[in-house]
Length: 221
Image 1 (tube, one colour):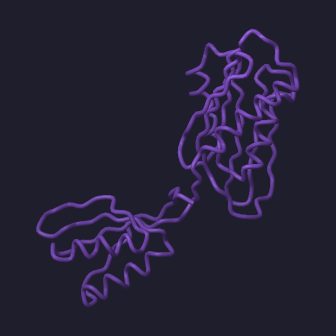
Image 2: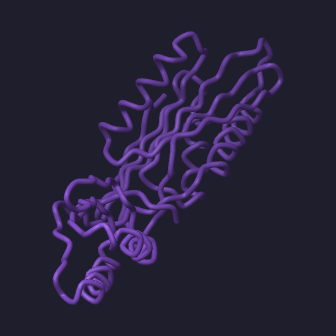
Image 3: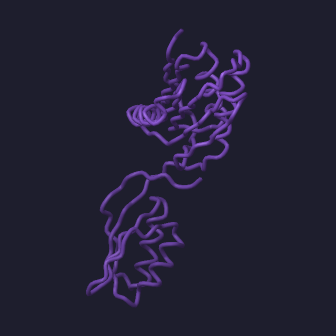
């Protein structure tokens, strides 16, 4: 049995990623199938997640791992049947991830054997349905470039700047109340310029936010 399959494919369009880590459970003829899904943005992250789930369910009959890691122009895929008959576990779960359109996703389907053999067809169906259950339940997010910025404003500007931040899809990460209010804010890059324009208009050109970091965040799709 080939224990895994890994391949690089061309990514031709934007993709969604799991927004959070979630878990769902399915029982099939007394066998428990526990599907755990999480975002993973690098192979090491996916492996760490798989290792954590296997440790949590160390007494399980099988812990079937699958991941799709996307980045730039390529994706890397992996699956293992983890002792189940070849082609009955990892490959069907990977097919579900493919069909979902998700990338940067790691999935482990844990099985506790219930005493009744399911046969190859029954196993394919059970692992497929387990993967579908968790994939259909997870929220979708998108990797978005963001600016983290700081600014100091007088107290009488605070409520208006809060409203401006929300209007430009920003998030308030922190507020420090001293002689002025020092705010730490986060904005999708595409909306930051509009926020700066709003600030200039509010302060007659006297206040501007300073970018302290540009990174990526997962935003709800």
